[in-house]
View 1 (cartoon, rainbow, N blue to C red):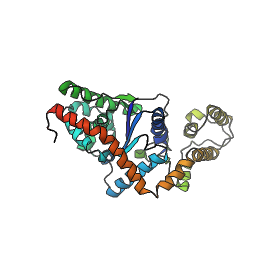
View 2: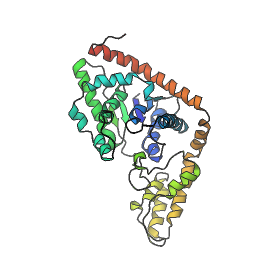
View 3: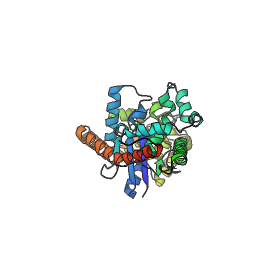
View 4: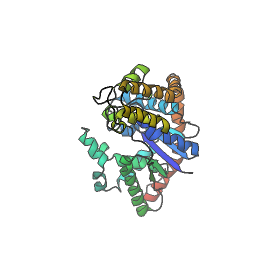
Length: 324
């Protein structure tokens, strides 16, 4: 049985990229019987979100999204990062062993600066807090996309430095990268991302959802013209919901000509509602049950702290800090 950990910043609404890139795998880990920790990274979100009310609401909302998508709190831990305060103590200990050059090489920091985020210490030291998130629950596997692999390598490097200095205390995690996990294109053709504002939200009101799907960017081909499905953003999104036979049929329709982009957008909307209709209904019910969501988060934090508190006590003992 593996110990799996993954987190998401509650800085926007859950979208198709989150589902196909992460949540589908989360459900597979749970079904397999792995010990799973899925946390809401509200400390991390503070590097870009500085609105008290919005941070509180998005954290609660993302928890409800997870539950609605089928993450069963009886078989996994769903918790707020801030409900595991020991993670910040572990982060400080790890910071004392982390070379500046290791952080300066992190491409995510450079990318976010290029996007206009301020170059503050929180953004720079983000990978150390991420390492603490992973190491505090003794995670073996961290499911990530290829673009996040470097941060797991940083966590491994930090864990090895700690163990070489103080003894074998920390589990050294491995990135879990699935080659068959699709990179979901956004409405503008770039990778779907909250930071790009190009998402299709899983739980948006139906009118807003339709608007998002119908705003997927297309080329200027006429109705009669044949179209290359391999260069179509619409086809790339439609494929996510389609069987192999359906993909072949749609590909043939694209190439034959006579296919209107409006027909493809309607098909995406219909398939979206078929896939997520039950989850959307469950999500609407959870909106009226804030106490239930809070109880799930607190129970998840207890599961995480049952592992994290003893781990931090071991770390304190190893480095020479008294345990009170």
